[in-house]
Length: 103
Image 1 (cartoon, rainbow, N blue to C red):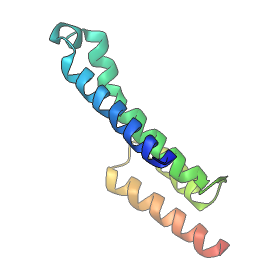
Image 2: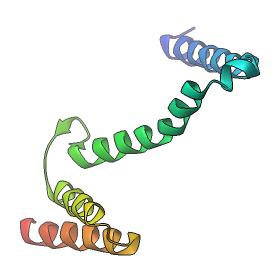
Image 3: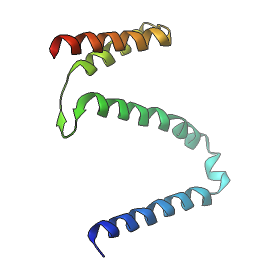
Image 4: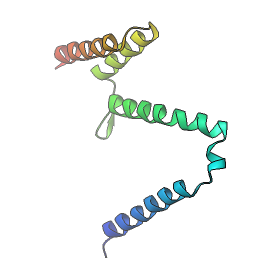
């Protein structure tokens, strides 16, 4: 058996164990207000990490390019309490203009 198959079988077993542990947790633990606050923030943290990784990296390199400027404009628009379509369009236009002038 190759190392790749061992990794696939091992990671599958770990995923199954995590999924089983999630369903085996008692309801009283999940009803704790602290756990509920943490669970409400997990999707936000994961989405933020995904945006950061996709904005500041290309394959194996860390870099700051036109995408970072688009995210900065989006953050500024969110701070200014702009509507969501304005945030998205502003970020897209900024990123596209900088991409056009740099390449």
